[in-house]
Length: 169
Image (cartoon, rainbow, N blue to C red; front, side, top):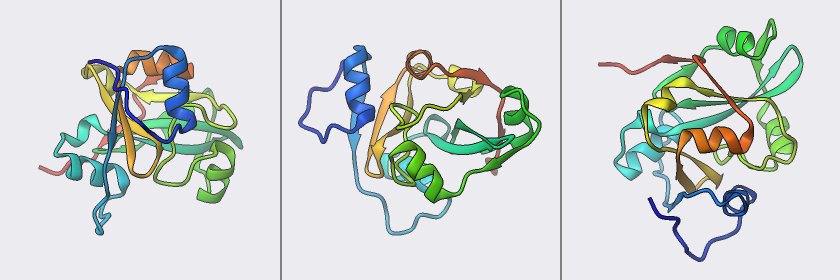
């Protein structure tokens, strides 16, 4: 996959990917008016992609300290497993306004890359099943395809089994 050289609004996430020399594919699109299931599932629908390859970024507090979780759109974050992976006892979702202040991104566009304040980051191990995953590029209508291991290296993340599969067959 070649790095896309396009005119784009240089979000901190895109600028960090470029500065690190990481190959990525920039995807710009519009969300539907019906965000049933959230932004990540809507992104999969709009792009016509397997939702298991679209990953959402969630901000949490583990024992009161910030943490970042990257899980597939098809999955539900398992708070107990995230707390364990982070070496803590209790994990809870962060209030959206606090997540926005901490990361510098808006809800629905939070990227695990180049957050205003860095937090321990955990990527669900299912990402390793794919050559590339799609994550937020730093705003709601922008995503990037990136290799999971390169993402993990860039954000100093660990892979862990932090998501429960939430697909309905």
